[in-house]
Image (cartoon, one colour):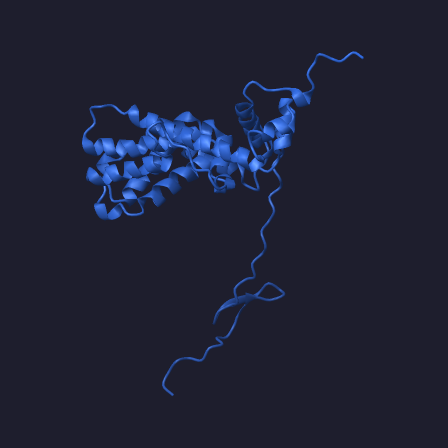
Length: 287
């Protein structure tokens, strides 16, 4: 009996299956969300058997945890690269303020360029035992880089030492919120407008921590994101008329009842003649 020399799908071995599964999972997250696929589906789309995929990951959650760890490592590296590009001629205070600004820029730009990573990184994936966020080449996590930037602000005298405690909450929440709005498409900004927006966020964080306004970044007027914000508001107005459509007729609002006539006011009778209404309140005077 003749047998085919073509290997079956069950016996097929991918050259770098682990990384291929990670890339396929990122594509599936973008298409269907974190809960919209299984490890078996990812394997099937790559043309390999589920058994081959299970040699690398126990299940979909383990696959997502690996994506989250990789994403955190990439994010931390992006933040460190942004800090390394700062000019060397800055004074201590200016450098400390600029460090916080560029770490925020690195965070936001990473989120925009790697939206599937970003969505998985802050989900439940890392709650699996034995999984922790990855770090930069210096072995610092993105959170440790933020802590270092805030410590630098206090050490340089940009913010008072008493304002340092808990500053991570304000800084991280502000930058992460901006990144999430951009990734989800709720705040559609171009690259220049994104740079302006992170400057605005950094400025308000530093002002809230008591920094000298003279040290804060001043956003450029040529990339003001307020126009994009206004356009977003206009697009989402419930009474907005779609382009090319006729404007709906204006509907008259409800008629408010006329106020009751006051003392001594003139009313119109059926014939339209005015008549004096006697005052209904007693006159004030001695009893």
